[in-house]
Amino acid sequence: MIRRIRRAIGRSLAAGLLFIWADARAQVSLATVVDLAERNSPQVRAAMAEVQRATAGLQEAKDVYIPSFVLGSSIGYTYGFPVGQPTVYNFSSHSIFYSFSQPDYIRAARAALNSAQLSLKDNAEQIALDTALAYIQLDSDSRQLAALNEERGYAERLATIERERLLAGVDGRIEMTKAELTAAQVDEKRLLLEDDANEMRQKLAHLTGLPAASFITDPKSIPASPNFLSEDPIEERTSLNNAGIQAAYATAKSKRLTSWGDDKQNYRPQFAFGVEYNRFAKFNNYQEYYLRFQHNNFDVGVQITFPIFDATLRAKARESAAEAQRASAQADQTKFQTSEQVHSLRHSLRELAAQQRIAQLRSELAQDQLEAIQAELQNGSGSPGASPVTPRDEQQARIQERERYLDALGANFQMIKAELTLARSLGNIQDWVHSPGRP
Figure (cartoon, rainbow, N blue to C red):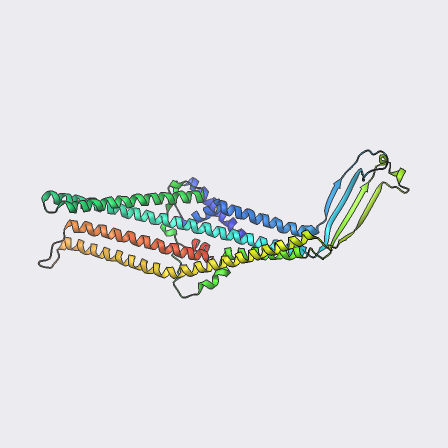
């Protein structure tokens, strides 16, 4: 995972340089935006720092077996019997030789490192989801704004036609008011979409660190939607692939191993190894108070401590055991919540797919009706006695076709939003982002 993040950072850095050299309004692909977001995200950077901290913690747990070396001096003048042990210089070395608790502490630190790495992956996947959804929503907003601009032109022409019909005495004022209301409603939708598009640009700017005005989406870089409508029991893969669940259980394992180590601090001996050398000065009067005083002193040995009773250590063991139980319960809760979310999303996809299909069929029907009206305007209805089609009917059909097209775009976005959220829960969002885009 660390290598993948570093590769992503490298790609993001290269992409950032390209942004500086290229036109500020050039298109940028989805994968590039996601890589830049992962590189720039404070959430990911904090998770990387946690990985570094956990790595140092594991090394610290192992290094207790490596002897420490200390060189010092406590030189000073003494009068009468020397108090303490003033030395010209001294050297000492100490290390744990064997501890019943330390192997558990090492395994706990290794589990904590695994948890930090999985949390880093989980944070990166969340940033990928947030960035992908903002990018796709911006792309959808751009398409809808283009459609609304066309619809605005049709609404203006319809209002002009109704105004002319009013002046000619063909229609009343109600039809003209309806046409003006349609144009006003289109303007309102366009304002709302412009605000939403600007909000998505600002969000992408905060995620990537690039100027908000530089974002022009590339629809071809958006991969095809992941298909979760099959009967494949994907809920069973949630615990295996979801980094957040795995990180929670790794944390629970680390807490449990730590509690085992704290428990073994009671009633079990600990063996330590030590070496010490002292050089004593002549002016401290040692030779006047010791029969066989010598300036050079050296000792080496093993220290064995056996904790018979220590209330603090016993309380610490109980505290660690409770902390391990709490972490295990939190891991189970994370698993259950994610499983419920996957189950809910899986079933909502069927409803969204049905809504998407209906919106698409309505859009196709409106397109067919528009083409039929245009053909009738050019060639006539071919039915004697039928009411002739007017330019007003054509503009109304054009407006209706654009409205149904906008509905289809909205349904498509809601569908892919649910699909990507489900892919995030299953741990597949990164694979989707970096898969080939649409042809």
